Image 1 (spheres, rainbow, N blue to C red):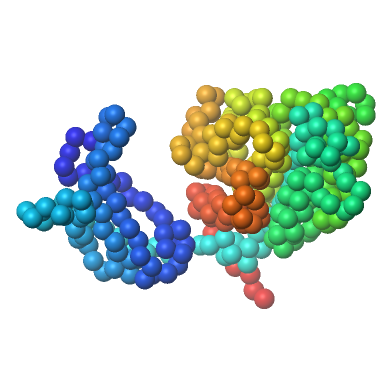
Image 2: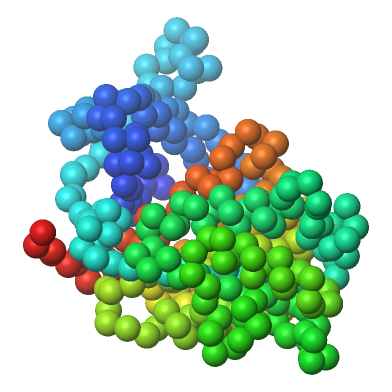
Length: 337
């Protein structure tokens, strides 16, 4: 802003993100001039590679449209000072014995439709076909099963009226609040089906209590010994946005990541705010989140693009794990085999 010689702040980018680990892969750097109107002016660009970035400092910006003019030379230059920093990886922490705990929270609000209606997202068919909730649960649990050493899954539901007549926004799908965990994928799927058949879909769609409960579990144990993943499956926009922001910001200092899968065709604009890919999440009560811990995935969009739901859901987890331990200066444990 208001300078022809800007100095950008330092950026730390994982090599995997920058060039997929390929030091010779082409990287395009594009420079724009900021305008108050919000419409930036293109200055120029150049192509390079990580290998070249590490041995060369000065690069010339070229604007191909202006390059057609006879008197044009270039649109300025960029000096880049870069270096490789060896850091710990997600696998280093796994090899060091870090335990990954999976917590599942399923939306049982009335907007899903009655489970005996073929149009319902919770529809339990008789021919062995799986509904969207079952597909998402099974796909992700199968991958995380290899990460989780004890095979236990904490299974919660929210937004339902229970057999005792109370509406709950955080209840154990096992039916026992003192024992909310199930052992193995099969038990998880059975707990889901039993819950569908034995609760009354209600509402509203609230996340805060689920996040608060799982955050409390994540805060227990020795530092660096475990990392908690909360998988929330939901069909609609949340009703307690402010309280949810508060709980997420509080949890951003804990070893926890939250993955939200949106099922159905509802408007998921609030979920994109929680994802915080564009700007950091801010709570009126607790301020700015210390790190990004939320990943939102639109189930239908992923399928339309032909992507694997598992990879789309879990792609940010490794970086979130490493960011947490780096922020707290916790190195991976060294194990002797």
